[in-house]
Length: 129
Image (cartoon, rainbow, N blue to C red; front, side, top):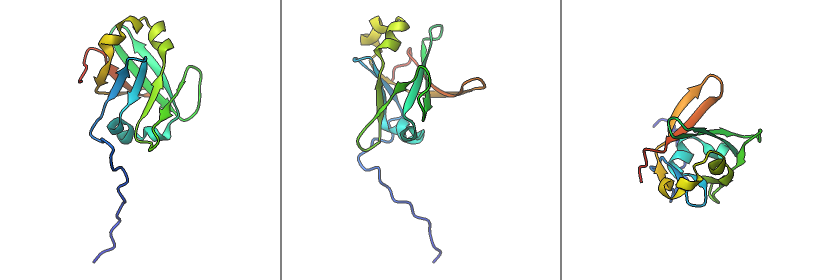
């Protein structure tokens, strides 16, 4: 028998199929387990937020180091999800008054910007849950 390269599965209890970003009523974003796992969010400590008012979309750029304008993320104890509270983002973009309607889960999409690099974004008109 050939020597096989087994890899130990350690994500018991994680809902890895949940590829979503959530918005909470406390003006925060949650990076749910499926999204967190697929995109190695555990490797990042900070997130930069972008808002496109024309298309009603919010963008996310993750970084290991703090740079101007980033928010510090909090990772779960088992490092299977993360979140960030950023009321100032909602207020400055004048979407704080819509928070009750925005609460829910959104399917993230990905684009690569020559200027900014990889950006994940959610369309606020396409709530999935």
